[in-house]
Image (cartoon, rainbow over the protein chains, first blue to last red):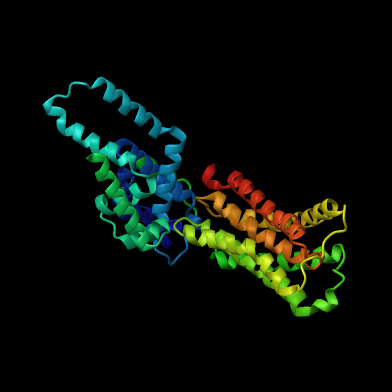
Length: 168
Length: 216
């Protein structure tokens, strides 16, 4: 990171190689859309580049860059109203899909999980996805969300409980 | 995994060396001379309270400068909040705002023995507006300075950062106001002095939300 701040493009390449995979996984878990996750990944690196002077040398890079990624995701969601359109599409699908074929049953089930996830409050869903999908430890989640470890555990637990409730 | 060429080209096109921001504490220290000047200027530009001698140096200047230091600490927290990945938890934000708002009342309780000294009948509004204007006017330079410091960073929650530095600057201004206004009646203190601090917080929120790089 120090090399990148010093203006070396090779340092940026190294940073991209080290972070892009995890960032993409995180963004994918947030938006559940591969193409959008790729766009958000590029936006995240551009935003990181614009605000690179805010990185404090000596501190871990991960919380800093994930905070930027989360912000990029939230801004994108806000500006496009993607969630609203997604819910509208789900409603339209539910109305049109009265007869469900066996070969798309698996997809429907995925949709059920997705719908159940949508019912979970955003803060709980985020903790749940980071822990159960991304495999982050609760300490890492707590550090990134700026909450206590116990709060991270509680959010993930309550999120899972609510999701299970909606799946029944 | 290598960076896509368009992204790499855009980054390479703007890849000049940058100097990282100093730590929030160090940047907040820039406010110290301004805060000291504000605490001195508010009574100096108007007049000192009539019981200044009875109050003594510690209960007068000492408590005012202690409150101003608390204001600078809160501005430092706002600067920390403005660094990605160093956001404050909800508990810290809530405790800071509650503690900051309670601080002037605590200082009043610790430095006064009676709480019935208020404006003369019929003068409450005029005197209240006078105190509010003096405090709000004194908070303005610190607010502008703090807003510049925060805008140079990257506040992801500009509303919270603004509320914090507005509160800090309001406390700095109120530290000077208490050397000028000797009224201890709760309605006057709550509405004129507390109102000015809340006003500074509100201005901080608005300015921060407008000026934050994260909204552009």
